Image 1 (cartoon, rainbow, N blue to C red):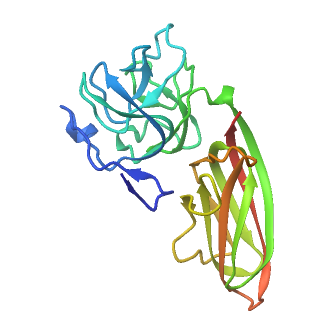
Image 2: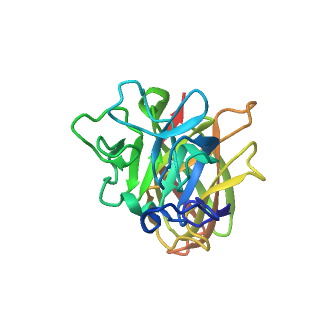
Length: 268
């Protein structure tokens, strides 16, 4: 799978169109998170929210079934009945054009009471949210998130940092979780690049986020980030790794402070 410059989400190289290919044969879907292989027990459409049986079969989630406790997976492409494929367990699926107009950015995402599997913003008997919408075509899929996550609001300062310097840092926000929003401010630097990494060490780890390749030309940036992190080093505190490259200053001052606010959710 190829990585993109959209929060380093992954672009699926291919998919399977079904009878409604004009609607569901969307192979530009981007996603990132934790996946597993399941067998489709019925025809599944792009963007469908699913439940998983004890035998590892994936079905369209039926919001009216009293037997289903919560959704279990989400599909980034159409899969025919009887086929085995990869499905998202937790993470972000973006560019799902078929759900535009059905979900609201910043609001919880549920499953339609009339169309099993289809994501919607609400309905009269809504229960068991599947996650929340970060855009009208993007879902942060996190079933049961209210039971297993802790909200974090963190303010951190870096500096003073010299123009031309590169500063590596760590943030203690748990081994696994998701960054939902990032506000970043500089005292005097007007060109800089901020990156976040996840892995087992601050070096040679996986790039999760980059403000802009070549640098951000601004004293302030707000990003509805929506990226997941997973630090596998069990001997260290729960960390996400960061790197800041300071490129220029508006005032000619050689150094200055940076500060940022992070809104995140971590697994407990």
